[in-house]
Amino acid sequence: MMNEKYIEQLQSILSSPKKISIIPHRNPDGDAIGSTLGLYHILKALGHDAYIISPNDFPHFLAWMPASENIIIFDKKRELANQILSSSDYIFTLDFNILLRTGEDMEKVLEKMTAPFVMIDHHQMPGDYATLTFSNPEFGSTCELLYTIIQALKLTHLVDKDAATCIYTGIVTDSGSFRFPKTNANTHRVVAELIDKGIDNPAIHNALFDNSNYNRLQLLGKALQNMVILPEYNTSYIYLTDKELNEFQHQKGDTEGFVNYGLSIKGIDLTFFFIERKDEGIVKISLRSQGNMDVNQLARKYFEGGGHVNAAGGKSTLSLEDTITRFTDIIKKHKKEFYV
Ligand code: 5GP
Ligand code: MN
Image (tube, rainbow, N blue to C red; front, side, top):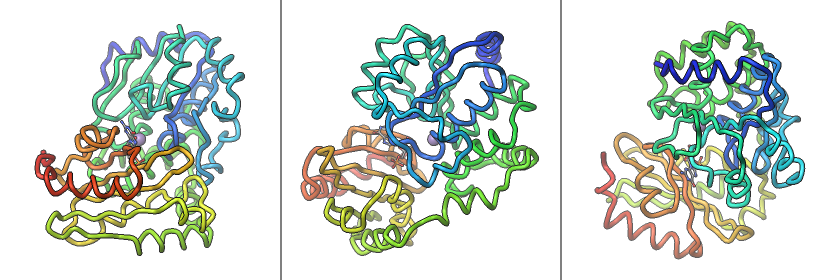
């Protein structure tokens, strides 16, 4: 399953103490934080000097994760981040495959680095910035891929309860709690090994999904009321305006999972979620699909984004209203071109 030559190269990199920076994508999710922390725990156990530098803050529903307090936020501590990055022997990038996914500012910093990059990722169409690329879109999560690499390196004995907890978290979140199509026997075998490491799996689900506050559920209620169905096109969408987000004191991570409701309606195979982000001057877009409707291509072609066949993201610099008008137009004219 793993390219042996790459594994040997990684083995040789890790064979003597190194200073290593580990980077997730901007607006990191459970898989990005889970995989960077999982790797961090392993590298520490191997005796490396490891640092996680996240482009921006991570959502509070992940703040319980072991060692998450050690994550350095680039946006808040640029000088420190720069200093660590430029003195690193290696830079590992996890859960993304083009440097722009760290944001324009951090991309510029990373492009100047002389240290070699190692990519571990499961998105389609990897960029070529890394000297060592572990890229496999057949994996449902970077965390599952990471664990499979650890197995190939024969280092699973170093995965303690904390590392296992982080890796399990990324698998759960990216697989929609084991329900998305890329969930396979390997996923469950990896999970079985993680459970053998002593993780408290019910407590992890609880920390991830049963930690909402009242405002978040009210915000979900608002988003659901805003849902529009385009029955002829088997498509639905929801949106939240800047005003609505503020009304419910929106915090980072509050809208996580909302997009899936649009797909839970019978007959719908494509859904969009538009979030008006006035402070950034954009509308953030989440796309989800079922079956062979390819939202990766749709996001790439029309919404400055990308991702996977059934889950992608993008953005628009038009107003929310104009974005939705343009989206409706594109769906009516072009949706059928994106069945693979
Ligand atoms: P989400 O809707 O949860 O933000 O993103 C869904 C999936 O699409 C994630 O796997 C994420 O990595 C990917 N994705 C989100 N935004 C972008 C983007 O702007 N560009 C690319 N290439 N992928 C994205
Ligand atoms: Mn992922």
